[in-house]
Amino acid sequence: MKKKSPPYAIILAVILGVVAIYAFFQWQKVQEQKAIDAAARARADMQRQVDDAKSRQVTVQETPTNLRNVLFATKPMEAGSRVSSAFYEKKLTPKDILPDAYTDQNDIVGWFATRKIEKGDPLTPRNIGKSLPFLEERIAPGMRAMAVKIFNGDANDTGGFAVDGDRVDLLFTRYTPDNAFIIDTRLVMQNLSILYVPGPTIKTEKTDGVNPVGQALSIVFEVTPEQAQALEFMQHIKNGHFSMILKSRRDIAEIKTKAFTTSGYNGDLSKVQARVVDKSMLRVKELQQQIEAQEKVQATQGTTNETTTPTPPNP
Image (cartoon, rainbow, N blue to C red; front, side, top):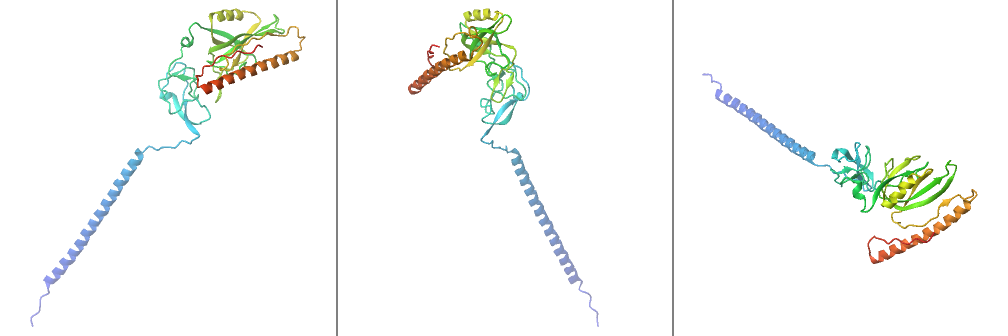
């Protein structure tokens, strides 16, 4: 009997089929991996775009309603120097503190320091301005500027609150040649406008004034030529000095007073002082009533803020 040969064709076909199936699955696996890699790259690209968008966004921080950004000096500035953005910074400050200070809403670049400013000082209309305040521009026609040495005593006569633009009355006190006691004190000039006070040497959150005690301050006043003559004369009187008393800017009335003196009172001033105080308080009350009456009339008529100086009662 003749022996049959093996079915090589069938075996080869089976092997080729297996190889084809394996190659198909390998190809499919590669395609799936490519799809996974493409999806990963797409997600990475999207994440980068999101991150870039976030980095370009400006973070807006809400300022608490009771705070605002106030401008403070970051370095000292001499009077006359020009303000640049490098000279100040913003700090959150309660709204009820430094109400007149400049804030981040104000463009002060290019302005000038009108006084010497120390590091950490708030920037306000008292120490910076759009232009330099040359003194001669503030003198009214016909008036003069004159410096007068004002005695401050052991405690500042005005508490350090007198600043440029205020009005004061001047007192002149005389002593005996040996300075044993006071001869008298007189109200010699009234309603003098202050053009310049040296300083400030005292500062708080709500105060900006001068307070060097125990020495005389050369304060510049706006005076008439005749007042300048009188002040110059009195400055050279020995055993005498000027003091100033601060008054309301609303009160420009002038009064007549007698010199306060110790002569004839035997050293007991209590009764005399009480009489003077009682009489002066009546005068002040009447003056205040006149001012209030005038303000009511103006309020009802809608007039300007210019007021007629009330005639003060006789002292």
